[in-house]
Image (cartoon, rainbow, N blue to C red):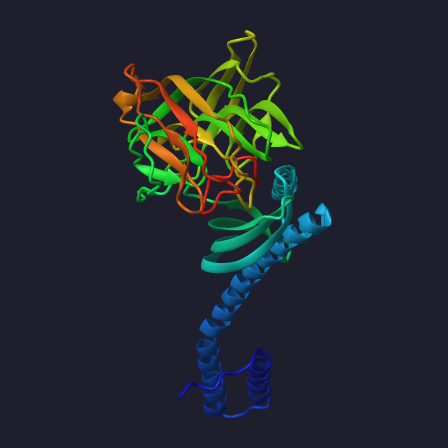
Length: 413
């Protein structure tokens, strides 16, 4: 049988009673007995009270995450960003605003949180961490909809007496390994993929420390028939880690027009376009290199026009991998439909690993195939060329409304 508990007010009254008895000269045995009982009761309720407080904080963290998610859906569906502010830090609020804008520009017309399962919630003073498995439904202008399930790693901070979400990351861009889909057709030059992804296709190298990556490609001429997007980039980190520094080019199809831009991004921050004009048919070379410590240089050169963009950023990288990727960009709660980019060829694909400059073959880079929700290949990388540093990613005819599963969120919060 559980021991009866005593409330804090009752405990205080017992303490007062003990003092009164002592003041009026009650026997030492009586006073001592009451004081001993008070002490025993205090010891018995200390642990439960602490547990209740911790439990209340965990509940408050969950409620904040749930309220933040519902507020994001409401903000998107009513076009009122301000409803998200009370549940987010200033920096995360700005990311949420950008995420909703990107979702809208991708053709989304509504978002709904279908379910959220909590895997872990920990509170440490004024900070907290939580992991959820969330399923979101997104509807689009053409009447279609899809559901995306992803792991979310949240960090929260205590602002006065209220918790606020500070970051939300979705790890695991690449699934390792995965069975190959049976499509009934074969592509002679296609590489045997070592992994699949809902939004990546290309090559990734792991093992060792990576301090530079470079690659050249021709910006594809995208067909402006249906809404969608594609991004071509090189990066460091992101295969087995939550960090990723990347830069490249992107095409976005909307309203029968195609917009091309160059961009850089350092997760978990959103990507940002840079002041370099790119057009279909332009040859572009991107190089990311560590200068010293957390200082990284990013250079994007338009070889066709001779113009270039260069910057130095501060970023703490795991330096755990290098990638050459054609992507269906992700925007917070889902993946944008992959456009009809045709094919894009990477050349001069190299990386510096453990101080040595190596090409794809020497790095042992592994192929990644992008698949849709039916596990049909959407974008297939070829085998590495005889030069050891080139390959082509080809868009298949498989349908892509939006990507399913988890994915690294580029252009999202």
